[in-house]
Image 1: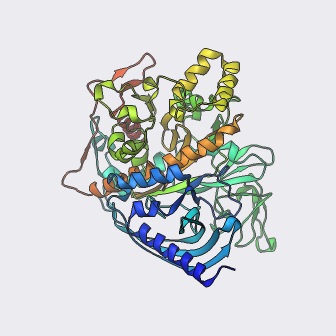
Image 2 (image 1 turned 120 degrees about the vertical axis):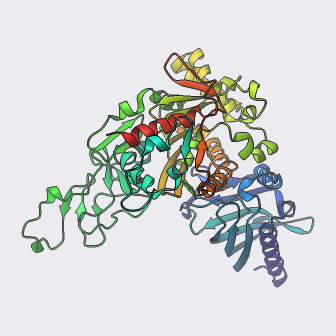
Image 3 (image 1 turned 60 degrees about the vertical axis):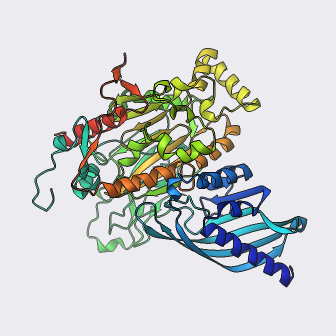
Length: 163
Length: 420
């Protein structure tokens, strides 16, 4: 069982990550990752999904996470230019201790996105978040983030923002 | 141009050689005509045989806006059934894919075999006589395949698939022949991407070489890619566009490729050596090297199949202002060690979170909004008209930024929409 302090630190991390993504603060969001980070958004809700055999929405290693962020920082990533207006709620947080002194956090999220780039539609996103967190130089960082959308396997509108 | 008593739409006036009218993207009556003339009478790509390898395997798709089931029967043949119970119209198979011995409607238990024949109905005493043979699931009267790619036509009459594809089978060959055993497998699952625009924007954009340096500027500023060479000086670009006829249109990057595997991110290493050796054994070194230099096709097979280099994509019309772009990586049977790389390339290029397609689709969405400006209803289609040429095979070829592909698409559209 993680301590109250650890739980609090993990919750703070999740809230901060959510806020940085919502506010298109790309460099700060990127700084939350470890050097071996893996960012996975499967294209199915099937728990047996395997990114080495099945197509995903996102399966980024650290280099590709950086590319994703750099694209957004060019100012000509038209699918996020201007950036969507977003607010997300993180809830139902459960934290467990994992191997190697890491912490595993599971949570639910719901996100309102106003996609202002064309038809100005409000999109609702929801799903399950799994974070693997590690202390690096005294700061929590994420080494793995998995986002299983409730509609992962359905036709989706643009998902070019940081989910 | 609207109202219940309006005259038939004059497609000859709306589709001209160097311009097209905006209502072709915005008028629901045009969409209804397309569903009948292109997606009901014509040949429509449905799926690939590798998706349903065993008897009883099925996937659900749409032919135009009609829900269908592509199923492998107990005899191994592929049928395309209309996904609607003959009794009260219930969708029989709601899942994206599945495995079944029979197909049973959940509403009143009517049961069909894998070929759609009605096997039985509960409480048959309620029918004085029920002709089972006349009450099976409706099925596409014509289903045909080429190298595992399956097309259906919902009309019993019309040209054959071979006539529809014509020489464009060479484009499919170009992609399939990269497999050492000559087969591709679409087994990674599909990602579907919603697009708030008319379906024709997708085939047009998929074959448009002019937009790359602009719509995808973010990518070109961020990483090097095989498309870099088409965003330079107009005179130094070597890639071409090609109109194969029957609405089949191609961007051919290969004249700009010098080395092998430029289309595969300049892949190298032992896996490449094995791949080269396998194709050299089959085709000899000269043809094998040509295949590895040219890479797979980048071409639209009219109306809804996009050979997207290492991806296969489907264009699904939904309504006059809504469509869905499907994609999956194309695995080459015989060299599974490439699947991981092909998956990562698919995720980079296509889909809602990729580095290319979201930008295309947001521009398509803005096109759709702009096309409602009725005071300026024409779209220009004349780029390159004065410099295109016809090759020895009768195909029109031009600079990669020219609208030869768009004109090829629309010329065939006009033919289909005005056929008697």
